[in-house]
Length: 469
Image (tube, rainbow, N blue to C red; front, side, top):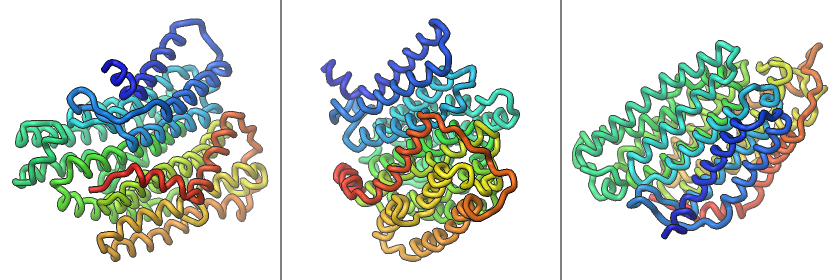
């Protein structure tokens, strides 16, 4: 029994052990960042590798915590993204005074995400949600000398408090009418009153805040712009992916009884997110704001996939998140390197970027192609699977809207490529020295964008362990 406890909680316990290790290092003899960062990256790599071995399915604490093959894979995706972000942050962190604090905040947030994903109870879900949000708000203020960073943290705290209030109010009302917080009990009770349906809508609205779906997206661009690039990448990829995994599992399990309600909600949110995200992305010059609205549009495609309510939908969403990790982190990796050395974060600064930094130019270009859904990158297959999953219910008009918006997105993604290769700049960004850790991360992202789309075994495995409505 005790052994089962350690095996089922293995990934969470490893994260806790790493946090304590960092605390002991902080209390011990001072180390230089040049020696500390490689050590932390090795520890995070070991954490990633351990996630693939010695796992099993089961539940703990009266089914308040449960795990399975798909949940383990989702946690491994988050571990992979965290490790890549750590590698990409080398240039920025090696001159920072609070390296250990930065990692403690990110790992604490990651621990909260793990509990969210494994939750079988609304209270555990809420506690994990708060644990994953507050440390990221503190990390958003990690550029202590910049006023925009403090502003980003404040906006995130205020918006998160509002969304958390919605979630907590929805949870309290669901508990009031059902007498339980367990998903299994809620599932047995049909949507017998408008009060229960409204409580469920509040819960979904809180999740929509966390994943930046329109019209709950107003905090996103300002927070992305003000936070350090590494924190922005974590928000855009790890935080958003965790909420996608949670809402996917929640809707397909405890939310089955509200399927008709949330189906129409997701359709409206998806259309608004795709259209608004695309229209605002067209106007952006700051790269982080550009990627913020790009991520909002990507959320719209994810919601279309979730609305399909099938095993294909579940597999398509998880597969797309994996592809999104590689694509978005490749883009953020290049932006982080440029920002750390030159402080430049505008798209116009990348004119003639190819003349001085050909490797980074190609990585950023392929990332733009993947985010746009241009074959043969994995982003094309990811969006294709999402649209096919959404089309299963016969909403061809919805697929038509999404396809037209994909054409619109080509314009603003290719605008970046045009600036890199085709526009002149008398003073292009200087040639950047790429640290070994960052170079490794970029190669991993590049391989992921190309191989994940062409290797059918990736999608086949995800499909084999997925679940439907």
